[in-house]
Length: 368
Image 1 (cartoon, rainbow, N blue to C red):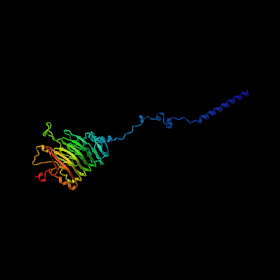
Image 2: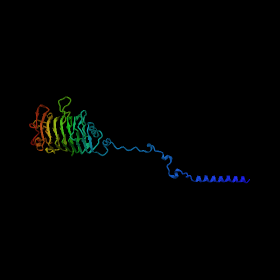
Image 3: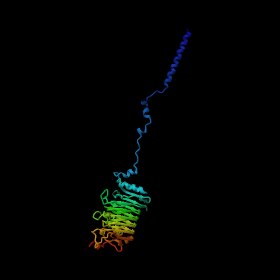
Image 4: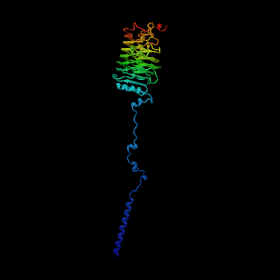
């Protein structure tokens, strides 16, 4: 009996020790916590976000095309480099097609440009304000402008349409070290200049070290055809190697030249400026300039308004003055020269005149 009781007590002691050990082990375990209690992210938040849900597409920087073709934005400023015909035409189209304004921009030519195969559309100077064309001694070759008799006007201010690299200059422009070779312009009812057709307002246009060679301007003067008569169609006039007509601006030429040119028009033909309406131009606007081997054919005599007793011959070497007074001899004092200048009457093509025997009115004849 005692043996059984002892066995029972031993079993109970073992059970007590085992229970104590289990309790101790449970106390050493860390308490379980929830995500809300610890601030640890839940599974839904810690999942890697997809690009579509959380990543914004970065804003792209505006391209050059976006800047230059938006005519509602501020004018383009700075410098533009042009080295090919395609680049030159693309730049012109930002104005012609998109109406982009350029202010205080320098257009740098980085190489010679050949426009053969293209019909150049004159650029409207209403969108060019204080722009410099820096040729860096390069040449634009084979610029061709094929005219029509449609009544075209300046897009912004409705000025008469000029033909040239620039249609009409309305703000200050500067041309430096830029040449044109083998330009061919056909014009009906236009004022024509290789660089600028017309100058208006208070624009100041200057030319430095710029040259025109091998120029042809076809002013379409033939009134003798059945299709076209004087009463039905006026013809090109105010034609020159640099500027067709000046109607308010100021022009300076320094070390410029026109060589090897043939020009035809009704009247107002000259090497540099076809006609100055301001009365402000004189020989002091020209320094070290040269006109050489130029043939100017005029047809003013086809109009009944002009008579032999008052021959407004409307041709000159450097420019035609607003009072038609001869100015050819005034240019020698500032280093300007001319030679091989020929004036031809369209009605008498066999007779060739020169500045020595063919002059506009004297002051007394112009102001009787």
